[in-house]
Image (cartoon, rainbow, N blue to C red; front, side, top):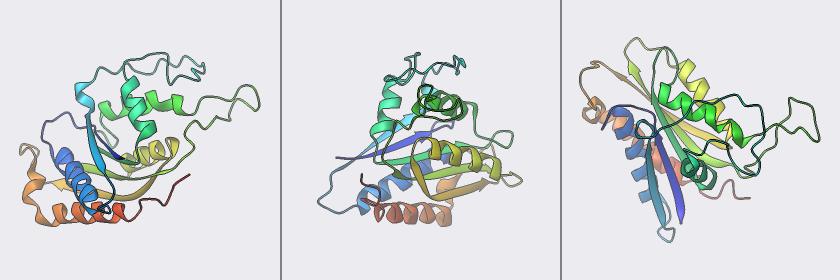
Amino acid sequence: MIKILVISASPVEDSSTDILLNTIANSLKNSLPQDKDAGISFIKLNELQIKPCQACGESPSPKFCFYDEIDDVYKQIAECDYMLFGSPVYFDSVSAQAKLLIDRCNCFRPPDYKNSSDFDFLKILKKKRPGAMVIVGGEQTWYEGTRRVIAGFFKWIEVVNNGMIQYSSTDYNIKGSVKENVEIINEAKQLGKFLATKWGDFDA
């Protein structure tokens, strides 16, 4: 089973972020070789109770974290074959929901206190996975800050960014407005097809 993990950091149900992520995921799944069975798991971060990182400074190895509210999310991140991550832009960065998860994923690279300096980290995830990001904002939005945060997150959890969909809404009051934008929807479908060609590129 090829595991496609989709994580939305939008607090809005059926948001443009959700629509674009699902469009990419479905296109990816339908574009994989017919002999490959694939499943999509969609995580809406706003539905979870995520405790902020407590900066405990300890290595939880071999577990992911001392706080276990999101053990299932950790497991899905560790086991997925594809990662799609999307966030709206809030104050030139990711949403609070996204930042909570990203901070809590520090445990994927715990400090290597035994064999190196305080600035070296153990790499728990040995296999790289293809991925892509979705960023949604307004017409005057600066997207680069959000892109950098998600790119850093991808690097931390061994996901290779193979593309990005950026959507600028003309009206914040219209939920899911991207569904009326044929050009962006088609771009998302093409990204899904492209991701399908990356299957097997990062096999350990």
